[in-house]
Length: 273
Image (tube, rainbow, N blue to C red; front, side, top):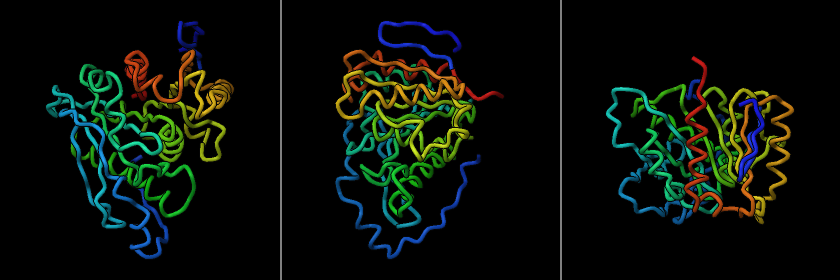
């Protein structure tokens, strides 16, 4: 990925262990639980290929949902790719499973997909601050990743993280916190290398795909342009695709072509053995 290639819809630009501990004071357990609402546990997808699961969060005793997709070809005899997918603010935890062609590509290309909630539908996955709820949002993501890796035969060299909108910001943050986990990253219409929650040195070695619609009225496209400019300065291997006329959401969630770019990118990046 060292050449610059013009495309109809974009530009190609060159470019730990999961165990961790949190020491934080939560106050009373009831105060923490009160921050969650019934709507946080709502699902959106009825596709029978999606498994709707829950686990009990050790820190609070709450039941937290997550969604899982496992290709029909999986039998545990060989390691499979894992794609961790982070939803946008206000969306249900399984929302991304419904993007156009998403599960079909995961089936075809052999990806186990997991979509954590992030503790609440607007939790930010930890990037918004250092408060109790922020830490629980981050903890939720990594706990779910750990559970999936314990249950399935996952390729540690082909584990990927991406997100849309708030999930894009979460991708920059989670990647910065756990850089040794990920073989590739992607952010759609969210996040920036210049954000104060991003550790540039920690993630500069990880290939990064950035997707954004040119007419995004929610997150200005200039943020991604600036982020990609910084990636270029850092010598990061990256791919930027700006969708002409694209909005904030439909440019990806209703486009099999753009969803396909996500899989195409992860298909060709992996950790060095």
